[in-house]
Image (tube, rainbow, N blue to C red; front, side, top):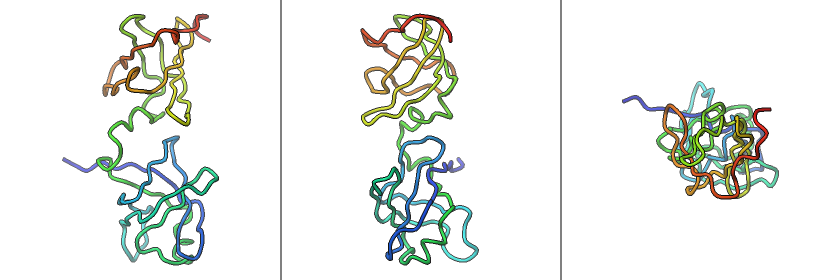
Length: 176
């Protein structure tokens, strides 16, 4: 079977003399860069390694991540990565990535076992503890926290089954 890959971050600037870079997530994904993750830098350099190991990872206190990469040990090397993207093997990323990927979720139907069809996912809001899906349909708007008790793994096709907790039922009012 062919290996699958996913673009996870973009290098926005070099930082410090040790060759660290600041990365930001792409495609509205949560932060996926972590220490020990092997990433490919795209577009690749003509000479040199295509794959690099993340040797350190932390916050830059501005919404990005301060990342150290193997083979990048000075500011000049780090500056050569600015504007490039980091690609990771899909198998090295979290199993529940599909629960947090707006590109895969927007427009998907959502069905509750008790209430029936709730509508479609209109927005994925990022929160400090968990994401929240904004589902809009004939019953109105429903805000669903993306936690195990409410949302399981979405199937590849068809409606996503959920369990709407008491008190979070649709607000009424129908479609927008």
